[in-house]
Length: 170
Image 1 (tube, rainbow, N blue to C red):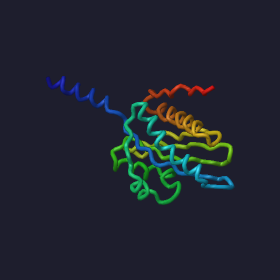
Image 2: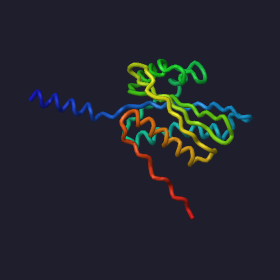
Image 3: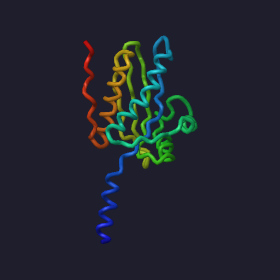
Image 4: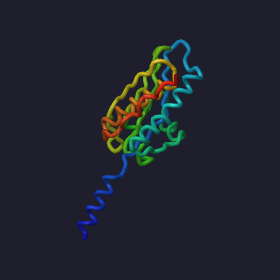
């Protein structure tokens, strides 16, 4: 009986979904007209899109309130460059992993969605991910988020499959 209970607990543990916290993405705009409203809007859209795709892939998304993120952040790019500090933030909210992201825009023609996935229990960098988005079109940003999700999942559980491409209306 004790053996059956132990096996039941072990199988329950293995069914627990991996918990990932996604921080707000920061915009690093190197163009001659940085921080235009459309880029700020695109940057703000990345986190919810990524959380949606991670949830679709079976991960549990852990919410970290914006004030907690701001309190841990000592300046633009700080959490992106300091995995140990990001991990401590993730621990406060019982996440297994924390993703720190940036929208890097070196040109008007393209931008890079960049993410750093950190394992919370040891503060080690699991992966550095980049997905290119050409142009400001929302559907291209969505495709870049799907690409980013696939790269993250590849290093974790390998169960994500992006949705099929949308069909264009005639």
